Image (cartoon, rainbow over all chains, first blue to last red; front, side, top):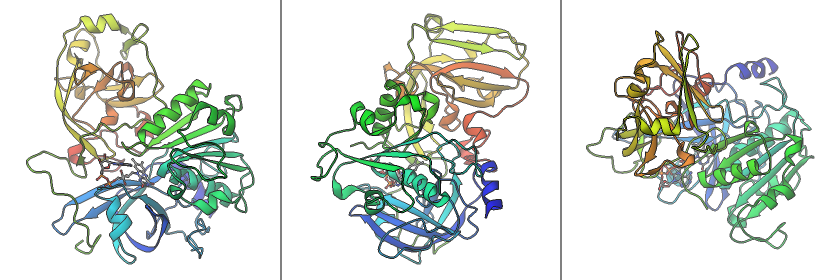
Length: 278
Length: 199
Ligand SMILES: Cc1cc2nc3c(=O)[nH]c(=O)nc-3n(C[C@H](O)[C@H](O)[C@H](O)COP(=O)(O)OP(=O)(O)OC[C@H]3O[C@@H](n4cnc5c(N)ncnc54)[C@H](O)[C@@H]3O)c2cc1C
């Protein structure tokens, strides 16, 4: 396993060509999001934060391609998920994605509603070598600095992969996640990120509700503010590695606040999912 | 391949438009950047062209505005799969900018405020194919889209059109830029779907 992991750092690109993957399991992650477990034969492993490209083919040959972040931890053979009730053992060829249904969306509605267990799909990846966190240093440069994760909506997907990779690697690097969602029912990985999970000591999760909050929320509903970052994030002096992911509007706002709070631009990595904002 | 993604039909296909493989049409103007958006003041803005001998040519914002301005209307193709048709810009052709620069270089490494870099053959910057643009749709280019000025090379995937452009280094040998070092294609022709290394 270490020899497989060691090669990953060098291979930050993508394996050329597409592979056919099969949907082997799926469950509702929220009323509007679905987690897909794909079996991808020959999957080379991945680093947390990377994504895959999916290609869908219609009967007339028309194809649509979209990117989806990988939710599962990088390490092969590690149970990466706690959902739904049974814990599927995410084997080395299993890749988990979580798709948020975008109303009227061409691809997300198909993946969330029609794509059935046993169906096949073309996959390419893993893609991306920039928006990644390396838990051990065997898969890339080890950064012992604390980690600040800022998620807007489904932007929590690759950031959860980082938390899962930290857990799988037994890493003690302190993590703080600020997770902005509209309403309690929109949360993804609610149990896993809600109740401290074994192995997640040192991971602090703050959910920021923008529209309506439960009684035990840490603050009133509203968009993320610099005060939230000051209260629940890391001070800039600690030089945290910052990962910001979500809709473009969220990422722009969050990255601008981080800069204003004194975080180094070079320490802020961003991934923008799409146009829609909250 | 008939059995792939059964039940997927997709949207009505765009008719009569030239869409590269794997792309879809959007009316929005999505944003892709690797980090925070730099805020660059035109009062201190500067563009440097450095040749392979080290000779440096610099333009201030006022210098740029004094050059011949063109108004290209072009289609954009982003590697994240959206394409946007008929975008209108105002700026300076690289032919104008580089006209008096003496060089035997074949490659360029474009640098940006914020540290981003991208490489491309010099031939792709010349011949009416590339501009330094500062106005989009009649208004000053917004920082999230690369303002105050970005490179525009519409015949290649949009990551080649460096936002917040700061420098152009002319080189005898090719040298990969930011995404190119991270596994993206060295050239990035959307019509040949050159997204990643090996495509
Ligand atoms: C690197 C990367 C990683 C991504 N990871 C994930 C992920 O883990 N989970 C996930 O659910 N999505 C993710 N996305 C977004 C995903 O690729 C699609 O853009 C999204 O599923 C919408 O596709 P669609 O075909 O359903 O919508 P389209 O048919 O393409 O668009 C329909 C309408 O929705 C708008 N729209 C497009 N994208 C979004 C969006 N992301 N949010 C809201 N509205 C949108 C469009 O402007 C349009 O008006 C990622 C995107 C990128 C670039």
